[in-house]
Image 1 (cartoon, rainbow, N blue to C red):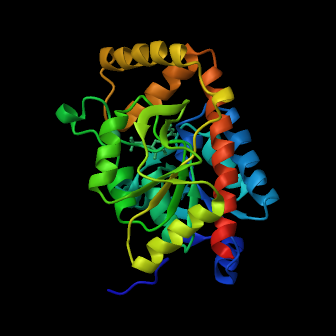
Image 2: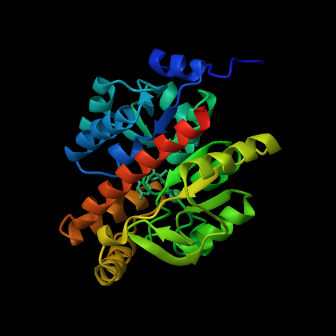
Length: 306
Ligand code: PSU
Ligand code: MN
């Protein structure tokens, strides 16, 4: 059965119009709001990030699921609804059919958001940290669906790398295997989210939004279906103290093991543990990183729209 590219998805008129007119649009995810940040800060972040993007003359499109309907371009009241309720689930791509059939509200992960954004014709997406390969994945097989999804979604994703709660080396190997293009933004080092340098190199670097847009355009010209990941490090002056980082990380990992946290609960559990154990400092870093990624994503979206 042939279906329209956006069948089953609700796209806000302002987003549809901007895409149709070739104006720049930036997709934003909602799991970062529903499962990555504490209430009520999550709502402020959701709305402030949209404002930041609008101030850069780019149309923001926060993506999530309302009453089962994947929605590209949530309005303020819908963002508020997702940020304020305990009944909101976390939806990666495979969860969308169940959410739809049961009319659930859901935050969408990077995997689901990227796919929905692409279906809506959006070319750039900013997030905080990507999902990746969990530590111990050789036993658990716990690798985020973000990775295989990005291999088949031709979009540009701005992130600050992956958090060191994951196995960063294994994540980079999987990105290579999956044929996903990775470039460092003004760096030769892959960032570790809370810290500017994860200890691993990036295969290539770009030094301007225009250069990042050029790589995305080249991907399109080549007809490749994979994502371009732009890894944007936190400023060294704003990063989490590496010594604090290493100590808290070890504690978080042993707490998760002791409490037998598994599956899609793992990432929210570890993030919350790190936030409490750093007295909220990790949260401030998280927000600085996310703002930076939204701003860079907006600039790349403008570069692509030109
Ligand atoms: N990493 C973060 N913050 C987050 C997430 C990841 O630092 O909020 C969220 C993103 O939405 C990401 C998802 O797509 O968690 C990955 O979850 P999983 O590992 O269950 O696929
Ligand atoms: Mn997982």
